[in-house]
Length: 284
Image (tube, rainbow, N blue to C red):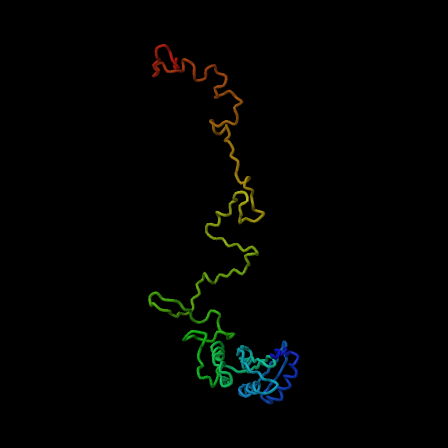
């Protein structure tokens, strides 16, 4: 029959701290219970012996190294902290071991205890510049060859020192000093949901009212109904243009009231080009 999985041992934090104090002795600087997990602060030079005891001591048995993290506190004399995250499979319990250092004092490598620490220490070195003695392959692992600086430091510029691009002339990737174009330094921090106006060339065409039911970019106060968008045309006044008439109520210049307006016999040409046929026709 399989043994049941160990229960979460968060209620054993106090007991764990007591065992750690008795086991590590003077190498332990402080032990606290933070957010339900145990945090141990250990002397830098004693980190290998402390982690070995945390792994092999009955009642502790932290067999796995889950992660090595780095933290930067620029205001501290020893600005960096190296944090070892350990897991006990038999007790289903985790704890963190903190070591303080700077960019000059090296931290002893724990690759002799957990070989996986080789890559984890390289990450901390690459991001923060923390040195590790005893690591046989301490080189960058995340950044490129020839990279300057350590990106996770608080004083590292967000834009970096160099920029990388492909050069068509050199037919290879080249590095150049960072050159931020002015176009990329105009930041609009207003949310578009709060009414930011982004006007592009040609947007003025979309500001005109559209057909009924069509979406419009105008605001509710500026919307004009499609039926009311057309301006009614007005006839010119008769006094300013003699050929324009407001109405036909008068008889002047309209031909109304004449017996034969334009069709009187004397108004027709004497020599007509129409030759009547014998017997008459439609022209007679």
